[in-house]
Length: 262
Image 1 (cartoon, rainbow, N blue to C red):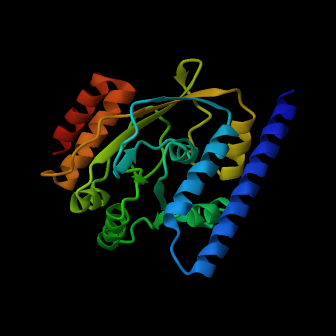
Image 2 (image 1 turned 30 degrees about the vertical axis):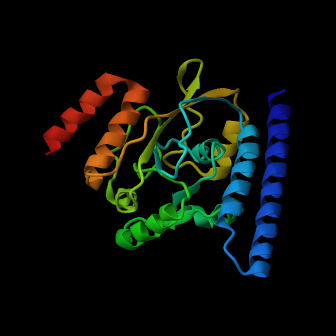
């Protein structure tokens, strides 16, 4: 029965990916024909596609909080590649991702066609990237970044890097903090995290072969970027997400660690 369940889920996922590839190809051809950037259309279609992709994954989703009514820079903790369809299904969003994702078969191409912006670690081009992110936000397009810079096991937060939050300050838009948590039988899920030496195919098969897990997404109160520098903005976002995920004790421990480091 478990193998049958895996095969059925895999077939459903492959069908969704094939549909996404068809949509991406159609939009690319349309852009060449009209000679115009169809980013708003791409974002809406991407949201539709990601909702189908999320539905093909073995998750039960709970969403708390209100979606922002104006463009914001979304910031979230990062546990797995599955964060992207689960968050991207909520509203039309673009993502900032590590450059390696662009090389992933099919998934990298789809991410590129969906308007994902890619960053190469250690490239030293944060100034130019912030300008690119700022232009994206100024055009009224919502954008999501993972300021930890990598995935975690979901048991804690890494330090939020503030260098890419300058785009929110320069554009005059607020931050939308988001906390995402994966649970299995009321405890942190050990299957969902995409960390360490995991490769995409092995993780996908392990995930599709598992029982349903619960995903909790909390849309936290926005943080105004005015009058704050990027590091202060990063600290506020990290504290808000940490409080939502782990409670006051974790926030206090984080503050103590930062004080000792200073």
